[in-house]
Length: 380
Image 1 (cartoon, rainbow, N blue to C red):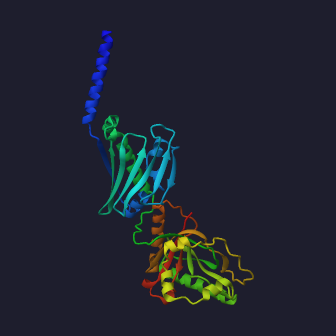
Image 2 (cartoon, rainbow, N blue to C red; image 1 turned 120 degrees about the vertical axis):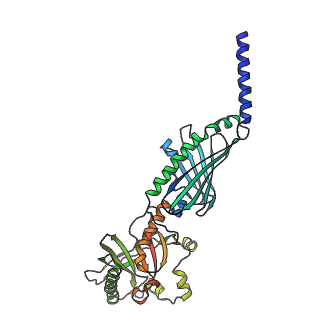
Image 3 (spheres, helix red, strand yellow; image 1 turned 180 degrees about the horizontal axis):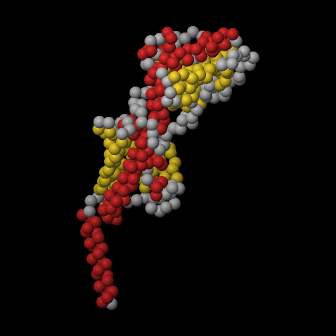
């Protein structure tokens, strides 16, 4: 009996000490780590402002390769949500929500999971330091009067903190795998284009703007001669479609969308266009384009055409694209294409097919610095 009373007394003393120590432990904990990258600030921000590439940088999948993710809400920014579920009890179920997002400044995630604590928040802050971008990642949690939670807070720098270090290392590696081009100056739109009948010439030129323009001019003359001889009309602007942008040579197709004269498509093209409307059409509104259904069915091929050996007929690409309007010297078009590649990578989009440009102004009749284009890159 004496031994029992001694054990009971010891247990009571331990319980009292547990409560007393717990009461004086902090009810709020935070931990912070950072990483640096040489990639553009906008690219880093966009990569983390959605959950499309979450699985590639967040360490959850390193703990459980079979963890399941479900995305909902907007594709990026405030309201975007990711739910996760794992059979491993140490991970369990939960969700991440973007609750704050200020461009190139910070992103706040609210996190809900089965671990101790409430008001769990991750704050990612971005700072430009010369040519380097610093990403600060801070975690904070409230335990309230939960004594087990307060004790768990003693180890938050090891549990959550170690995962934050892994996550930041993953972010740096992910950014390093992306094309390193700053696309902040582009007005990129995610839209669709319809497939069209085209006549095209495949050609090659030295990798300088004069040689490319000369090759394109010759191709356009050949295509327009075929258009005239076959009683066709141009239904859209000429296009340059990149095949291979090599170190010395540039391989590309020059294409013009066409339709038979007198057809419905040709008549629509021939209707007078208000100059103000034409100017607005050169930089189409993304919302209006999203609302407009694009018919992705390839048109019937043109029949009975008389074509020389170097001019062929076919269909242009139809489907989703990233599009950016550009005004300036055509020598910068390769850079615009690279910037679109960089944009696609940070937004979790997979490129497909070949990049192409619409020449909105005739190069021969326009000063180079005033030339207008739309640059496209097809995405899945």
